[in-house]
Image 1 (cartoon, rainbow, N blue to C red):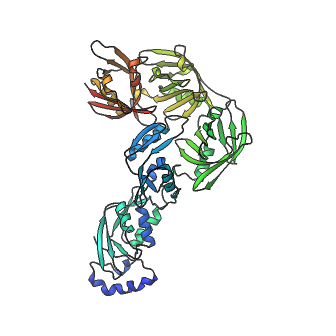
Image 2 (image 1 turned 60 degrees about the vertical axis):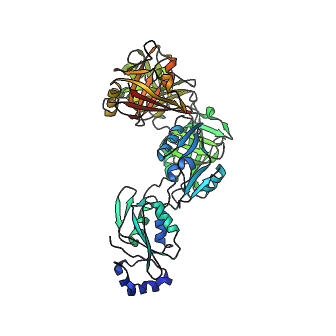
Length: 582
């Protein structure tokens, strides 16, 4: 490559540029006059380069809430009472999954100190407690206005040259990544002269690659790209005031959690409906259909979006709230320790016609993911299948047994959709279920402040069009399997199941034997791709006490012809089940 010299001088250095041509013969392949721009280590171009090569700490904002720092792996966090080891970026998804495990979620996350963090300039600092971390977090600038430029990146390696005031080359270095480039600039004095080995390739946020041939092109490329993408810096998903306002008026909202002055008032307001209108009014409707009108407004303060609610007779909502999360169909409001409101988007749930839900239910079969009655899970119905038919007929089956009942769709006083099921042989599902979540492949119903819950996953023609589902079923039906590992949290329980042999059969039947003289446990198994796109293995052995710990909708982590690894988050434990071909 041809080595180009680029210099951006202030007026006091003009003589250096004028003297440049007289010494030109002393240097290799110096650029022509068209490329004699300039760069100082303190120049605006250099600052853009430093910002582009800064450490991006936004990927772990769910943990530290700050974009200018990143916590070094590995470290431990406590999420809703469960200790989780974070070894890589991929593990951060587990935190979000734990947050979403329960509908009324406290999102309690505690970092286990000490930890080591990396700042935007790649300085590493040991943090011993929450107060030290808070001090570092307060130094960050959020909302996409931080120094880090994330919409464009250098493609490495890059060669950087250094020169003295007389334009004599004093050294060169090949940098392989952002950290090396940023640290190289940190070691330079303000008046140091630098040059790159052009052309340099950069990659834009949309994976497009561009080539620049001098410092002017480099600066222009960074300036043009730096505001062209959503840097996703904020813990609140980097939303804007305008996006929040559009989000609020687009759908009705269900109240999921209300905590004021450390008092949990969720039961009083659970599933109240809030309707925000463009003219700044908000209508709250209780479960009996009574309405109360208030006002709402938004503003920007302390680098955050704030939502102000004002009701004459609802003191628990009257406050200006920080909006600290806007994700997964939820809005989470925060106003200090012990002050929190969580609302869930209710598009299609409120003010929709019963015909809409009727048609959705009749399109395919629906598999039970969860039934909870008075806060107790009814695991014996896991994986059972509803078929909603014409003329108000519904069946519930596990392939070997079938119950028949009636179903109807109505609306309640709030305008919410209600599914009424009467199943004489199965009282566990015979309720008037309020629709609380409507997705393409998932339905969720609740009763009485969430103490009763029914979650259904859509299954069309037994996933006949999903090649992965068919392949996994064929593998698992290809022989007998033993439990090679069963971990419940840190406890290895494998030996307790050493005699268990699984025989996965057609028509959703599975039989587990425990030796020549031991008992056998017939059950139900399913492989489905759920509404989140994850492949799941449902295992249900009815009322068999010995099999209760294995009954769940397990996530399929990996599978070969001889080995299946399953994982489940269950309460305060992460369970791992590994099956190997016998």
